Image (cartoon, rainbow, N blue to C red; front, side, top):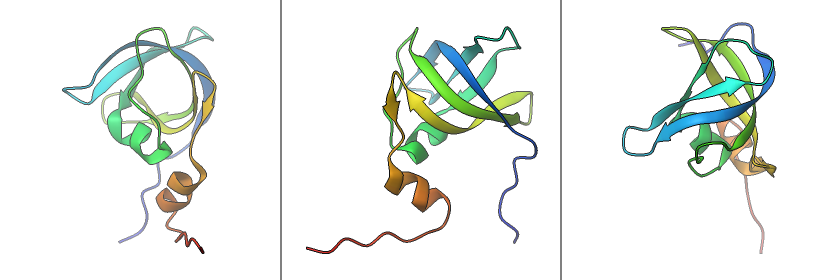
Length: 99
């Protein structure tokens, strides 16, 4: 099976409108005024970031989803960069650690 291709993406800065940790999703409002974007917990988990609170600032890549625009990759959440190991794992790379 070929890897998932989210199609064309655009990097945006946005503010979290709401996020429900029980349901595992929420919506963000891009600062450029474009339509609201769906944010799934999986995008945060891949980035190694915790669930956001209302009003948190987020920098992410947005692409087409099943019902409209959705976050396909998170770069930063309230100034916290995504974990490098989480990004490598999402890209299919293996990480090793030596002691």
